[in-house]
Amino acid sequence: MTLPTTPPAPAPAPTPMGKGTLSRQLVLRTTALVALVTVALSMFTALASFQILQQQLDSRLESAIERPAFRSRPGSTGTNTGTDEQTSPGDPGGSGLIRVDATLGQDAAGNLVVTLYRDPTRPDSISRATVVQLLAAVANRVNAAPFTVRVNGGGLYRVQVRTDANSVTTMVGLPYSEVTSPMTSQLVMAGLLTIGAVVLSYVAARRVVETSLRPLTRLAATANQVSNLPLESGEGLVPIRVAPQDANPASEVGQVGLAFNHMLDNVENALAVRHRSETKVRQFVADASHELRNPLASIRGYAELTRRGSEELPEDAAHALGRIEAESERMSALVQDLLLLARLDSEPTLDLQPTDVTELVLNAVSDARAASSERTWGLDLPEDPVTARADAHRLHQVVANLLANARTHTPPGTRVETTLRAEGGWAVISVTDNGPGVPEEIRDSVFERFTRADSSRVRQAGGSSTGLGLAIVSAVVNAHGGQVLLDSAPGHTTFSIRIPLA
Ligand SMILES: Nc1ncnc2c1ncn2[C@@H]1O[C@H](COP(=O)(O)OP(=O)(O)O)[C@@H](O)[C@H]1O
Ligand SMILES: [Mg+2]
Image (tube, rainbow, N blue to C red):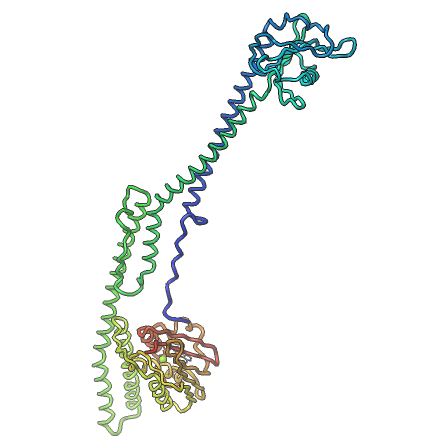
């Protein structure tokens, strides 16, 4: 057990954009949303342009296939063997147009009969072999809607085939790249735009989020400062407030800041009220103890006078007188302890001087030895003297209290070992006994006022138990800036105190 207890450390401030932070989530979500919207828009635009481009291509096919110039062209009636080529005069179909007026069939020698007109501006746009392939591919799709065909080595073609009343079949084809190449560049553009939008939105969202969350970070810093204030003692002043610019009710964070300031005002008021009432109670206890001392002294004086004045007292009167003396002595001790605790509470008026702890411990143990010869009193002192910054009178009282406990709360024959050592800037005094140990039910609260075990044992031992001895030990040691520790089990109980070396 260690006294005093320290408040829990405040949570460490989160790093900006660290895992789990609000800023990180806001930035990532905003960026993801922008990415999603951009991609969806690009897809929609791409689909629309694809349909427009394909419709344009199809209407060009339509107008080309309807052009009468081709219908009346000679040589389309299947007199040629193999593929015959002519240049289409004034082809209005645009670049890449192929036009085949063909009898889809074979001549006697088994050759395909085809008349091919080529785009005069792009004479190499299509090879004879491609046309043959196209015709083979489209043979069963005559009079159907325009469709797309893959030609080995020649890419994709958009093709329409139609047979007129004279059973002349006309095929018109345009390279599908007129749709695919603008689509490719549009998709590349859309991709670049998406990446750009994502990067831009990430940077912008980060800036905006960081700027708008900065007041929140300052608020957290203020809360952390407040949580580090030692509010459990002192007058309960809370000198920290959220800065006015962060407590402006116009913004959400400002409202939190304002509420936080109101809460701090409230806490400060409550602490001040508590401090005032505590001071009053302390003052009352100190005054009462002080006032009780004189009547108690009188009672003891009169008792003593009565005993001395009359030689022969009746037996029951002598017994009653003995009880009066014993109880008034106990009450005097109690009043003295209360007064001391009240003084230590209000302002620890210690007279801190370099004190020879070795001598102090030696004296305390010899006093204990004199008080009880039924116990074995061991002493272990270091070779070099130990000097601590202490109030010699109070420290003596502390050691005497521990030794008195080892005497009153253990059976005769107990061995009590007192050791002193200097250790890491501290003078450490420990009192160990092999008695029954501090009862488990009071072990955690043994340093609190009026904590004591069932007093019948003490009465038997002839001591007077107030339950204030260890409270005084704890208060005095804490006022020295030291610590008290208890380690107790049946057969081995150690109280150790440490106070700073001089
Ligand atoms: N050395 C010890 N061995 C066993 N019990 C102890 C010892 N020291 C203290 N205690 C227990 O702790 C209680 C509180 O001690 P203390 O504050 O000194 O009050 P008091 O001695 O007046 O009872 C005691 O009543 C006793 O039960
Ligand atoms: Mg005691």
